[in-house]
Amino acid sequence: MNVTLTISEIGSRGDGVAEADGRRYFVPFTLPGETVIAEPRAKRGEAITADLVEVLAPSRHREKPPCAHFGVCGGCALQHWRHDAYTTWKVAQVERALRQRGVAAPVFEPPVLGVPAERRHIDLVMRRQGRQVLAGFHERASPRVVDIGACVVVLPALNALLPPLRATLADVLPDSAAANAIVNETGNGLDVLIRPHRRLDLTLERREALVGLARNADLARLSWGDRSNAEPVVTYRPPVLRFGEAVVEVPPGAFLQATVRAEQAMRSAISAWLEDSSEMADLFAGIGSLSLGRSGRLTLFESDQWAVAAVDTAARRWGTNRVKVRRRDLFRNPLTIGELDAFECVVLDPPRAGAAAQVAEIARTHMARVVYASCDPGSFARDARELQDGGFRLVKLLPIDQFLWSVHVELIALFIK
Image (cartoon, rainbow, N blue to C red; front, side, top):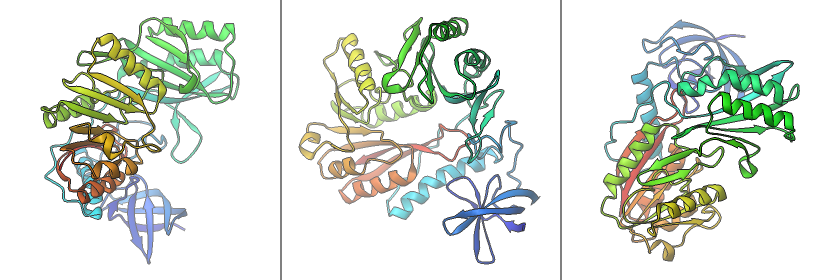
C-alpha cells in the first residue's frame, strides 16, 4: 500500500529520509522538503526502503538529470539535485562525522567541485547475450547490467571505447559470459584490463581479436586477467603517469585518483602544508601519486606488489637515491613508534576502512605534521579523534568531489602536533 511522505533530509546512501506513523522510510531520488508518494518494499535495519512513485511537491533544488540512464543505473544517486545544494550536502557529511566524534574542526577550504566528463577511470561490466554485448554498470541494487550509450561523468575518450569494446568482446566472450573492462587514461593513452569473471583461455583467435581492438582503438596497452596476474596481450606504448620528475609505468587496472584536478589539488595541498619537510613517509602509497616528485627524502609503504615494483622502477630510472619503496601491509603490520620517529611527517591515503591500527601508532609519536587523505568521512572522523586524543590538532581540511553525483566525498586534511 502506497504512503504519502515528506522528505526531511538525504541520508548517507543518498536516499531521502522520511518519518510517518512512527516509522522511518528511505526513498531514493527524492530531495529535502518534497512531498512524495512511495511504495514500501523491504526492511533496512529498523527502517523501510520504498520506491518513488510520484513527486507531489518538488523541491526548488530539483533538476532534470543529465543522463538518460539515471534512476536505473547504479552508478549515480544524486543527478537530480542542484549542484550547489548537492555540494553543501557532501561537505556537511564531513562536518557531521567530525561532530559525532567530537573532533574540533577548522573552517574548511573551498571544496574542489566535480564536473561532468572528467573522470579518467571506468570499470565497465561487459556481458554477452547472443550476439549482443551489454556494456555499462549494474542496475541499482541488482546484478543486471544497464547497457549505456555513454557515461556523462567520464572523459570522452573512455566513452569512445564503448563501441569497439562491444564489437570485440562479441568475438571473445562465449554466450552468457561476462567480464570487467577496467580502463585508465594515462599520459600515453588508454590502458585497458579485461578481467573475465570465469576462467577463459586466450586462444589464438581471441588474442588476434584483442590485438585488433588495441590497434584500431589506438590503446597504449591491453591486458587480460586479474590484477594479480594480468597478462599484457599487446603494448604499443608504455602507459605512464608523470609526478614531477618521476615517471611511473602504471600496472594494469591500477588505482588512480579519479580526476587529474583532484590529484593536483591534493599534491598542491601537500606541497603547501609540508614544504619544509626533508624526511617524509607516504603510507598506503599506491603508485605514489600524492608524494612522488617532491624534494626531500621519501619512503613509500604499500602492500600491492605491482604498485611497489612500478614505483621502484620509476625511482631507479629517475636516478635518485632520495626515494625508497617498501612492500608492507600496514593493516596487519603498521609502522611502530620507533620506525615513525625516523620521519618528520607522514602522508597517508588509506582505503575506505581508514587506518585505525596505523593511526594509533602515529598518535603516540612526536611527529610534527600528518596529512591524511580520505575517501570516507566516517573512518576519517574516527582516526581524526585518535590523533586529537594523541595531541594533534586538525588545522586544514579540503573537501574533494572526485565521484560526481555519487554519495562519496573525499578530503585531504592537515594535523599538527
